[in-house]
Image 1 (cartoon, rainbow, N blue to C red):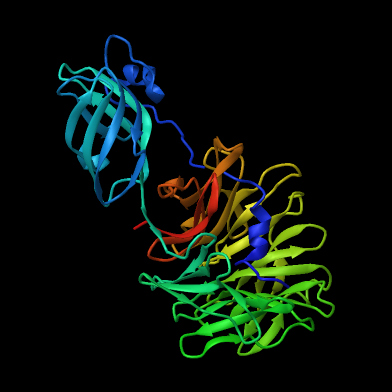
Image 2 (image 1 turned 120 degrees about the vertical axis):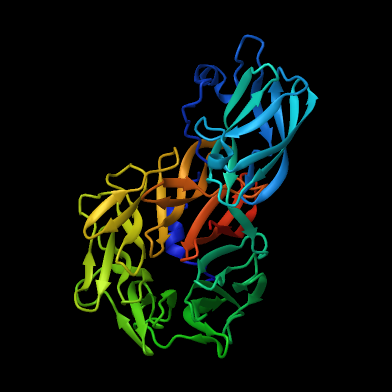
Length: 457
């Protein structure tokens, strides 16, 4: 098996669709609502009043002060630019302060703004007010985003897991292997003897890292890395030559998959106390399966393939059980689980329909929606039930729908996490209890993905 990317079959399950940031419109609620509706998206307001067509930049993270160019028409000396959320311009509510507005020309203002650290991550209206009180409102022209950190792993890199100490693992750029990012320092984890490449898949709070290592003509094998012992192969397979590790819990249990004799069929497995356990054999003697995640109680989730992909949950007492209804003819996958026993993944209820992110709890599936597009995938969740993943939007660039990394809560629904300057797409892989989200971002014109951290709180 050749060099492997993190969580390879998760990647393949949804990589065919490509997506960007959604733009759901808010109806203004201030007294100028009638004018706002006429000037939505920068259209002229009539009556000689100002209009707002665009801003530059169009987004900025919380906790920053910056100058924003406000472009439109009808501006005069003394015009002011303010930021509004759902029609409200009150700083106590928006947490976006206009420090000063400089008149540049009748078509441009320069506004110095400060975005507080607790400002809502959302799309804001930009309002220009002349000295005579005339208003122009550009609807949702500026996005407040979370702090975004490029991990410095280079083009072609991705970050796939983060623990509660802020340590992050993933795969580096072309020709690079598994990495560990810790407080700004990037460490190459190398490969096992006789192999030349590796990819990390998960890390627990003790700093133990798991993943896969391989090389030209050398079968991929699951590894466990520790700071004390370095990278070691996990013992055993199910009779084949290949294995891969996808997750590790706080007890040191590791899950993934291994091939049977002949290397054509893989079963979900767990390594516990140095012994490999076949999670599929008892309840499903035929077909194949892959384990994607586990919690500290040792519950495992993944995908079973026996005439179509189906979400499963495995427990030590009940073995492997399918949790998704059989009428999901388009298939489904369970990709993440927390210690409460909530699951996330995607479902395709009917052939030809798009993947939709779900949250499963006690036998009930909740559709998490999208960001304006047709499809979404939920990848992971923390103990608070906050879900991350990616979602399609209605925006198309270079002939493709772009995608956004999302965060979902029961109170706020699905929100885009935004992308750094120069990027268009985003994908979130994991979230910890500090609300740090990791994944990758990349541009519509290529250039390779870059391992990315979003600090939501």
